[in-house]
Image (tube, rainbow, N blue to C red):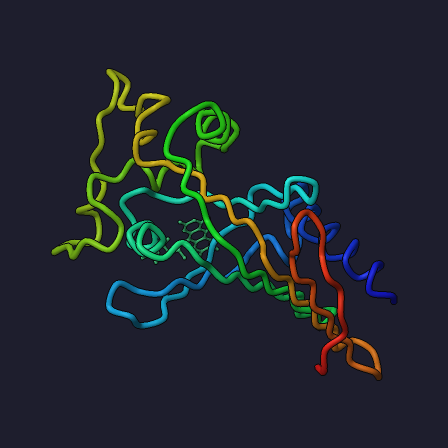
Length: 194
Ligand SMILES: Cc1cc2nc3c(=O)[nH]c(=O)nc-3n(C[C@H](O)[C@H](O)[C@H](O)COP(=O)(O)O)c2cc1C
């Protein structure tokens, strides 16, 4: 593969992860710098990808520690792996937290109800509890069902604007690793040692 082909493949794989279920790069690990200076990392689901706009998105709870961390240090690193094909994509970029507005509302309405349950908890993610169910308990309607916008105020979209992409492919006899560094509206492509 050429550097150009790999670049296209990175964005194709990321876009496939947003479009289809069970794609390897749907599940990514997102690393931030903790408020105590310690590295922090957690799983997030890739929700949006645009090569043209140079943006990836994931959804999270505004009350979660990662939001406090990104508010202080907006740089983030993401990594995803395809263990079957032995490929890895790393993304290094700057985040923007979208707390309201049309894009946030559209993302909320486009999310399946099951994905919104986490935003309806009474307690912020990470709050210590005496019992496993203490976080539950939200406003419900007369039928015991949460209102459609229950939890919406906790929901946000995190946009990641990649400044660097790193691709590693260990599937063939000859391992391949490529790096793409954002410069202006384009990318500088280079091979690097695997
Ligand atoms: C399969 C899987 C997918 C997850 N997706 C998300 C996600 O898209 N957004 C999110 O905020 N947390 C997601 N989580 C939970 C996070 O990994 C994490 O536990 C939570 O967000 C609290 O992180 P924080 O304390 O670093 O803020 C997911 C967890 C798993 C196991």
